[in-house]
Image 1 (cartoon, helix red, strand yellow):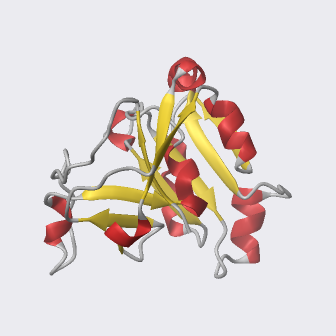
Image 2 (cartoon, one colour):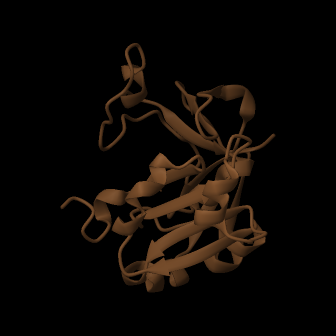
Image 3 (spheres, rainbow, N blue to C red):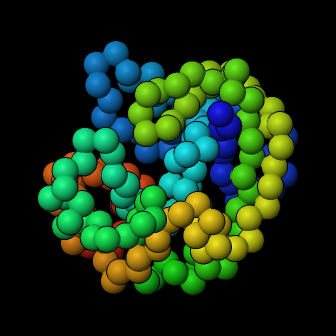
Length: 178
């Protein structure tokens, strides 16, 4: 297994635990997740972060409990492993962005058992870094179909489906907070 952290800064030599920028409501006993941590994503779910930091996006993928009905509605006959939705307003930034994928030592992290997210409570030094200059190509290489929309708001209902849905930076999506 491999763990990664994505950044637009290619000169990081150490990751220091920091609290999240926008705290989230956490279940009882898990409020520590808003405190100082280093966050990482597992290799299987890294496509969630193949975007500029503030780019709003929704990624979908089937799970073992996804129903045939939800597959028909949300997936169709696709053979990709994930579908990523972003807004047209973000496409040029996405297309021209440069990201740095830092590989992090697995032993320093604990699994949150939540969509591939891992955290470390202490400083972590990366074991490697790779420059990603073509994010559309990187997504395609991960088996992800990119869909462009005027607004992500019509996808609000996907959280009621049996597919896994990850929404990231949705506060930046057109019409999301109305």
